[in-house]
Image (cartoon, rainbow, N blue to C red; front, top):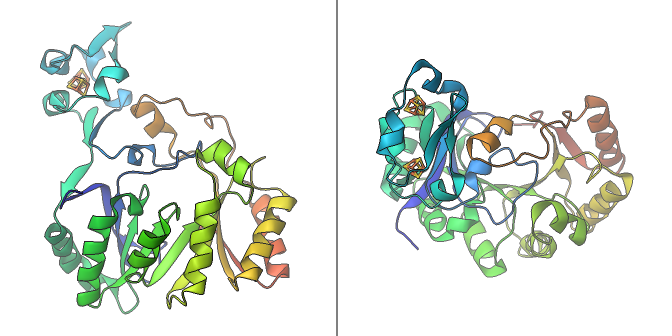
Length: 311
Ligand code: SF4
Ligand code: SF4
C-alpha cells in the first residue's frame, strides 16, 4: 500500500467526535455503501470529480471546461452542463477542474504524507486543551490500515489522544493490531440482523460484531461507544433495539450514541452523479429518538442522542 494516505477532508475544532476539541482526518475508501450515506464522496479509494451545477455559469456563457476535457465527457443540453459519469469515473487527469474558476467542477481527495498530517497536528495542538486530540474518520479509516497504523504510532510517540470512527468492517487481526494505538472508538452497528444489514449497506454484519466482541475480550484499555444511525423502517424497530441491548449487555458495553437520519448528504450524491434513494425521507423525529433512548436507559445503557455526547 502507498506510503501516502488519501483524505477527502480535514476539519479542525470539532467537539462532537471524541473528547475535547479535536482535529478530524477523513480517510477515503469504504467497503460499505449505506443507502443513506452522508459522505458518498468517501466510497471510492481514488481522487474524483464533483460537479455542483448550482455554481456553474454555463447559462451565462462560460464553457471553459468543455475543451479541456480530453475524453469529450462534457456536453451542454438545454443550457445546462451534462457530464458523462461513466467517463468521469475512469478519469485520471481531471483537467476540467483546473479550467473552472467557479468551483463548479472540483477535485475531491488529496494524498498526504504522514509528516504532512503531523504538521497539521502541530498547528492545531494548541486548541485541543487537556482532553482533545485527533480523530480518524471516513469513509472507513481501516481501508488504508497501513497508513493509519503509521500515523497512529506517531501520535502515540507524541502523547496525542487518538479516536476512531469506524464501521468495524475489517479483518480481525488488522483490527486488533491497529486498535492497540487507539484511545477512543465509535463503532457503528447499523443493524443486528445480518441479512437486513447486507440489504442496506452491502455487507453482512458478522465481521463487525465479531470485532467488537474480540475487542472487549482483548481487554483493550480504551473507551468504546457504539453508534447507530436511526433509519426509519430499517433499524428503528423494537426488535432490533432489543437485540442491540442484549448484545451490549452480554459484552458489558454501556454507551451508545444514536444519530438521527438527515439529508445533508443529498447534494453530494447529485454532485457525484449518483441517485440518492433517501431524498424524500424526513429527518428522524426527536420523539422517535427519545423512545429508542428510553429502551436503552431502562437497561442501564447510557444513550446519547446526536451531538449530546458527554465530552
Ligand atoms: S473528470 Fe475527466 S473525464 Fe470528467 S469532465 Fe473532467 S476531465 Fe473530463
Ligand atoms: S468551467 Fe465551470 S462554470 Fe464554466 S461551464 Fe464549466 S463547470 Fe460551469
